[in-house]
Amino acid sequence: MSDWTFPKGDLMKGKRGLIMGVANDRSIAWGIAQQLAAQGAEIAFTYQGEALERRVRPLIESIGMSTMISADVTSDADMDAAFAALKEKFGTIDFLVHSIAFAGKDELQGSFVDNTTREGFRRTMDISVFSFVDAARRAAAMMNEGGSMVTMTYLGAERVLPSYNVMGVAKAGLEAAMRYAARDLGGKGIRVNAISAGVMRTLAMAGIKGGKQLMKAGRDWSLLREDTSMEGVAGCALYLLSPLGRSITGEVVHVDAGYHVVGVPEASEDAG
Ligand code: NAD
Image 1: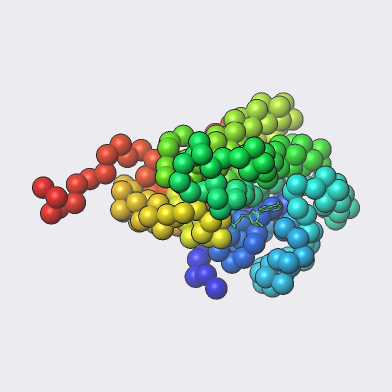
Image 2: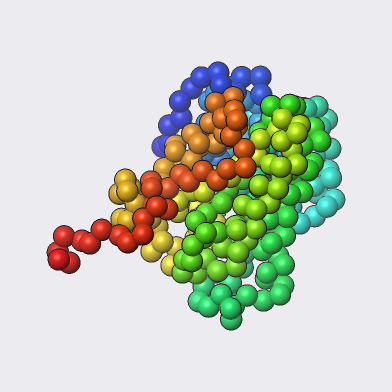
């Protein structure tokens, strides 16, 4: 199990919401769940199908939660059933965390132009972008005024990085979708933001060819010269989802030890 630590408090006391995307104890969604629970939130979870249940259930139970709903985001029937179950359980909600993405291994390597197929492109956009639009619409219908939504993105939306390919295009779409959702929902007092996390060692990252190299550069070239921490990402989610984030919407917050502002990395001492 991870050894992350999250500050306890009452910032999310009385708040209920949905977290989508816990697969195991390395998932970013799991770090966020622990941080929100430590601040008093009541959380329901969707997870990707029965195969994951054995891994996810003990995690959820370890933080005193019990509402777990199986939902593949590519299935309208699953999404209908998941949000109906959520409504029955909570009635209204205060927050949504969308932490879901997928692209095939063949697409996450080599040439973007050569390796992106029509089917791969469609599937990547469906799972990694449309699922957010779909979840935002469904969640907004039961969200209280003052509610807040967060989705997870990466620097590959803004910059070109090896192997990230079609997922970079999807993340650019996701960030634009976040801004349009923020526009639509602002009138209802609902805030919508994205966290652009640095590279972290998770299942999703393991699917990217050269992911370890991305992680090393993320650490060595970052201003803080360290890996992105789960505490930092989960803390940012808490800030955006709680009243601390009031007045912030339509924003992409980078939590990557400062990596995104670097133009040229510092020369190593022996390079002259
Ligand atoms: P993860 O593998 O733990 O999480 C990805 C989640 O997506 C899993 O829970 C998986 O079950 C879910 N998912 C995929 N296809 C699905 C489908 N059809 N239906 C329902 N769920 C589906 O990895 P993670 O790194 O925690 O990724 C979470 C989010 O964070 C993703 O959007 C990812 O792109 C983003 N992100 C990750 C990093 C990183 O370095 N790990 C950096 C920045 C952003």
